[in-house]
Structure formats: structure tokens, C-alpha cells
Length: 262
Image (cartoon, rainbow, N blue to C red; front, side):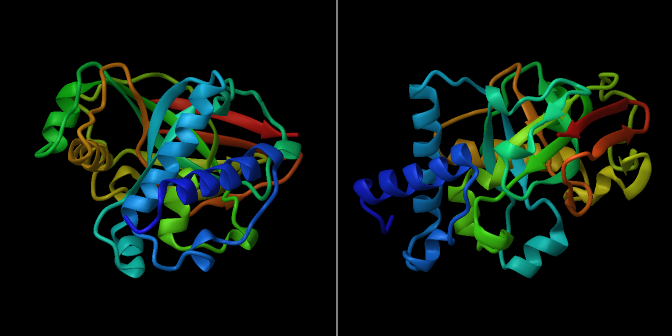
């Protein structure tokens, strides 16, 4: 690590205040260009600690940057990971208030819920599928706190990978007998299809993102507990939204989930 604990605490406070007050900021590596990955996750951990200290519950985990092409473009070999607090959750079909957000976008995802603990190192797709209770459609609302959505990866890790809201719904489906690589999705905005994809867009198989998350946590002495909700990463590019938009995700065999922006 390159940053001291006081700097980490200051940066976590800055980023979390931007989220809570819906205000943007310049990326933190502008001020601390030598910060490393350990610093970035330490800042995210401090953001998480601040939320828990105020009474928020951590209700899920998430993976981001889950496209091989995007990872190659950004010069990294693994996705980035974050957490989801209880107040991020939007009821299926519920409202997302634009006044609480900066410049939101939506991503269609497959959400996993575990029935057994997952622990790295050495976690793989087969272990993830064996530990999965069910999968279901999920829409993540991302809202980078960085001005004009301009950031580098260390800055976005510190910013809890742009997490801000999510919704899950539809028909939970067991993973036996279904090939999550070929499961198709359609993302609709105001009744019109705006993005299409299949599960394989996420690391070749969405369970691969969960395995990488378990291995990432294992290197930190942590695990994915049973009963954890995990968003496995965007299947398509993120789609911008504004007040008045209704967004629906339809996943083959799993029904749909939706939310609206007001």
C-alpha cells in the first residue's frame, strides 16, 4: 500500500459523501497517482465500514468489468468487485429517484443466490454452480461519482465500482439443466429493445465472475457466505437513463424485472 490510513479515511469520506449527496468529483488518482490496488480496495472497505457504522446492512456483492475484451483494453486480468448495501435495493417494478443520483446508467445482469459457502483460492465454475441456489434477472444501476464518467480502474474500485441501486425479480431458476452461457437477454427502455446479449458475454460464463470473486476474497481471508446475492456483471454495455424512463430486463426462462426512474 502507498497511502496511509488517514488518507484512506479521507478519500472514503469524500467518495461516500459524493454518493449520499449526489455530487460528482474528479478521480482520486489525479491527486494520488501512485496509489495501488490494495489502496483502492482499502478505500472501498472504509466506505463499507462507514455505512455499517451508520446502521446499513450489506445485502450482496457484485462483479464489474466482466468482459474479456474490456479487461484486455484496460490492461487488467481480473474483474473488479464491490458490495451492495440494503438501501441500494429497489422493489421489483419500483421507483428510482433521479434526485438521489448523478448520471445513472443501467446494466442487465444475471443474479446468483448461493446455498453454500464459496471460498477461494481454486474456486471454479463447477463449484459455483454446485453452491448456487438459484439465478434470476437483475438490473444494476451504476452511477460513478466521477465527473463525466471519467475514471481509471483504481478510482472506480475505491468508489465501490459505481454501485448505487439494483433490482432483482422474475422467476428464480435452478442452474441444473440450464446453460447459462446461451441464456438470452433483452433490455428494454420505455417498451423498446435497447440491448441484447447472452450469458457468455460475461467471461464466457457468468459463474466465472462468481468464481473470480470467491478467489479475490480468498486472497483477503474472506469468503462468499451461503445465502449471498451476487450480481455477476453487465452482459451488455451500460445504457443511460433519465427521469420518466421505464427499464425492463427479460431473461430467457427467468421472466423479467423492471424499475422506473422518477
